[in-house]
Image (cartoon, rainbow, N blue to C red):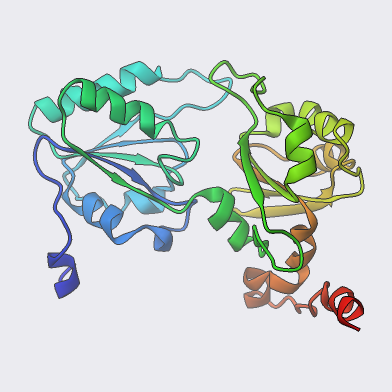
Length: 280
C-alpha cells in the first residue's frame, strides 16, 4: 500500500478493534479500509463466510482466529466472541473483526460494538458490500430497476434460535415489496414460500438462488416461487445462498456479465416491449 492515498487513511491502533465487512467473496470488493486493516492487524477474528482469498491479504505474522457460526454445526457463542475481542484489545493487540458482507447487515456487528462500549474498548465500523446487493450483482440481478420496483426488502430466514423470525409481517412484505432479498433462508424455504404465497404472491413469480456469491464457486439457479422446493432438490442447493424474489430476476439473461465473460450471449432488455406499450 505505497500509494499516497493510503497515507491519508486511519491506522488500526494497538488496543483498538475494527469491525469490518469483507464483502460477499471476491477480494476485489474489499474496501480500502478493510484492506488496510488486513495489513496492519495483529489478530484477525473472522467468520465462516470470509473468503480465504481475503485472508491471504493479512500480514504474514498475523494471528487468524476462526469464530464462524454455521447452522447445525458446533459454533462459538456470540457473547464469547464479543468478550474475546475485549480480551485481545486489552492485551494491546490491533484487532480486526472480519465478517462476510457488512457487519451491520444481519452480521451481529451491533451486538459486538455494544460489548466493546460496555468495556471501554475503542472501535471503528468499516462497512462492507452486503451479499444481498453485491452477490446479486455478480449474478446479473439488480435489486432495483426502474421498470420493476421502487422498494426492496431485506430479511433473514432465521433468528438467533434458528427459527423463522415470528415478527416478520409477511402480509405487509408481500403487498408492499416488489423485490424481496433473503439471507439465511435455505433451511426454512418451504415455510417462507408458503407464507409468501398465502399472503398473495404468485407461485409463478421469478425467483433465484445465488450460492457462494462472488466466488469462483458461484452457482445461480433461476426458478419460480412455487418451484423453489423442486429446484432446491434438483440442484442440491445448500447454504451459503442469497435468495431473491421478484421481476428483477428476469433481467439476468440480459445482465449476466460474468456469464458474458465466459461466452454467454446476452439478450435485449426483457422489459423493453412492456415499456414501449406503456408509452405508445
